Amino acid sequence: MKDKVRIGVVGLGNRGFFSDDLYPGLIHVLAKMEDVELVAVCDEFPDRIEKTQKYMKEHYNIEVDGTTDYRELVVRPDIDAVTIFCAWEMHVPVAVAAMKAGKAVAMEVGGAYSIDDCWKLVRTQEETNAYFMFLENCCYNREELLALRLVREGLFGEIVHCDGAYCHDLRHEISYGEETRHYRLRNYLSRNCDNYPTHALGPICKILNVNNGNRMVALSSFASKAAGLNEYNRQMRGEDHKLAKVKFAQGDIVTTNIRLAGGETITLTLDTTLPRPYYSRNFNIRGTRGCYIENTQSIVVTGWEGAEEGTGSCLHNTAQFFAKYSHPIWDEYDSKGLNAGHGGMDWQVLRAFVEGYKQDLPSPIDVYDAAAWMCISALSEASIAMGGAVVDIPDFTCGRWIKLRPKVEWKYSL
Image 1: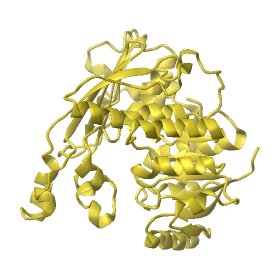
Image 2: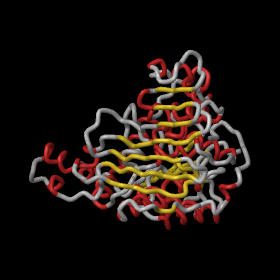
Image 3: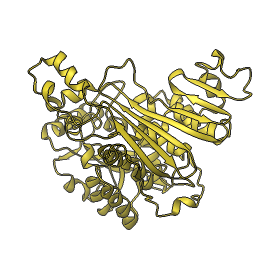
């Protein structure tokens, strides 16, 4: 087993570096890990590199090299693993280059731009046998892990349908993308799709055993008109501002329905450019004996102690279930008093990568998961362009999903 993992970081924008008490950049989470050595950082903007180097030295006493070319970073012999936090469109090129250079890869979330990119990711991992993990942190959120355990223990009966969403008012972040050099703006100007499906879809796929006895087979997507960003910019910046007039490609609400080989269905929603009162992933699990409803923090289980179905006694009752079914990784996290981003799920997903790589344990979210979840963006884009036509979802396992994977239980397995 490796004592330390020497890491190179690609991408120093909001997700990679941005320092905030509630949402620290992922480099700060890595810096807190005793078995991680941060060796080098990379970003296309030199000022981000300089800012990161200065901050890491002052706050963590860590000196890191810097480069604007990820191809220089991935071939360094003093780096074991590459973490990818850059713009969505660069995730696959950087991951492929890193795996070909013999590095382990931890890749941040985002949707795919083409099915070819998904296949390239899969084939490169298969050819190189590089350790790969998709950093879908929501798979390690407390509530999603609770729901997963309740499903696995049979409390909800047979699962029939799941809902998931990315409901997040991002009008300011998108509109000021030119000033902050944020990639979302160019995507909303140019694409119309579910551009961020995996926060919702990842935990659902684990619940429905996708790529492990089940798979997604087809989808159909519709998008509303694009009006929210124009109105926001008219209000905030005036009628004559260019973003008040420009035609955004991205519809304000995108709805995607997915059918699975096992007969289950999934509904995904993207909702990021209209006013809304709160963030939600609208994570709902519906089974024959019970359900989990995120927005009211409600769990219904037929016959559960004193909770009558269809009554208010099931509202906001998840605490009753956490007492018995909480995942043990959270007990350890809480006992250490850590503060590591997005309520701790950033810490959990990065620990899963570091510990899995060090001990050569199966990746909890592997390249087949990444391809299956990311491809929803490209396929929803195609379906929307064809008026909601049904589009087949590729099988990136080439039939291996039919056979259950060997069961290897370890701390961060899903």
